[in-house]
Image (cartoon, rainbow, N blue to C red):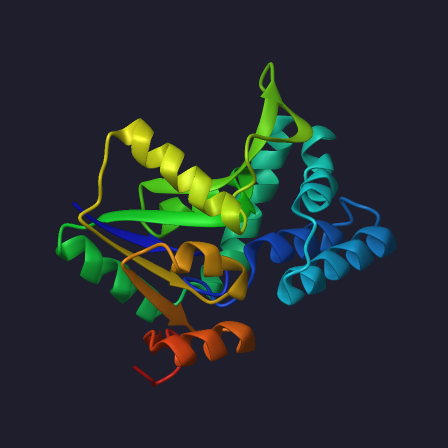
Length: 221
């Protein structure tokens, strides 16, 4: 079994879905405009620097899910996907996914962004398997707390190992596509790491180690 693993944000889509969800909440005035927007941007800058406190971030961004009934959250999410995410989907990313699908590979998205936000994006991209940061639920309502191991940095390796064991799968070959130096732990573990429109740190590492560098946004390889 060949496994094709895809990071989501800034890899398969030309933007960050987690940050975009925060901006959507601010635009709709669902959250405190000034406070939430400021913290959302601060956390995103921390992520870009590789200094994100993932536990603090999840506790911040998941609180809004605990403050509204599921029906309302789902309605907002539908609007978010249609207005914010669909325009970010990259045709070359869809072609890459189709290439692996046609080859019979098992397709998997692995992302630090929480499942509530990313599940419909995986469905939009027609990828059945998703590993994301999980959100705790009690009696059908979100508690605002994360559940399990955050799917971030080394946590992606742990979550992937758990998933493979649970599925009873042992890949004969694994490929991982990512844009971020935060994914270096997993990129180093797979058979075929591929840097996609990489940030400066990942580009430098990929160049030094002879990894392929591809673009799904521009007319490059």
